[in-house]
Length: 146
Picture 1 (cartoon, rainbow, N blue to C red):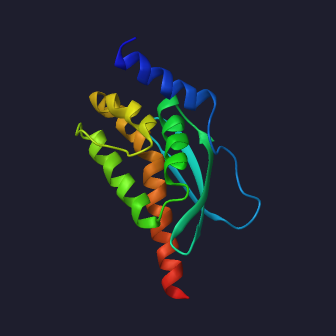
Picture 2 (cartoon, one colour; picture 1 turned 90 degrees about the vertical axis):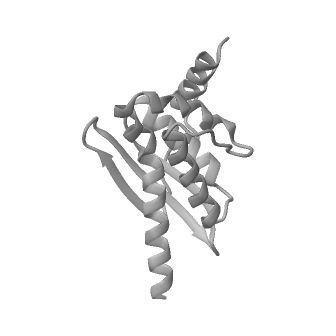
Picture 3 (cartoon, rainbow, N blue to C red; picture 1 turned 60 degrees about the horizontal axis):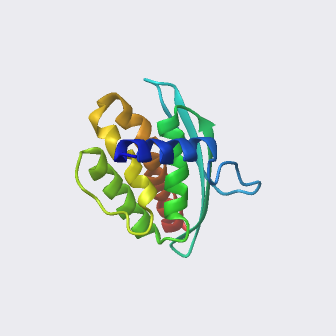
């Protein structure tokens, strides 16, 4: 099996067996983003306590790339500090630019590395990560107000 086949399998596994899909019943931080060019929509919910992403869930509709990226992102950031979660988002941006990036213990994300060859699909892959960045911004603003 070549690397592209392996990556395709990882992406389809996250698409068909999504991790952290769903929503919290309580008042978790909620971010809604969409990609009008292809119709992808995501609602990301984050539970951030003491500067740590305690939990993350997402819901929405979209292509296999956007939904599997959301699944991978929520897996990668759970239990991480907010600063590290933002660093992972920056690494993901670099990956989308074709740079070689290491995702520590969470190698599944590297399966999306081939997306950079298809510029129209980069927005699909980055949607969940942009929601994460926006959510952390909102959380930090809220925290500064109190």
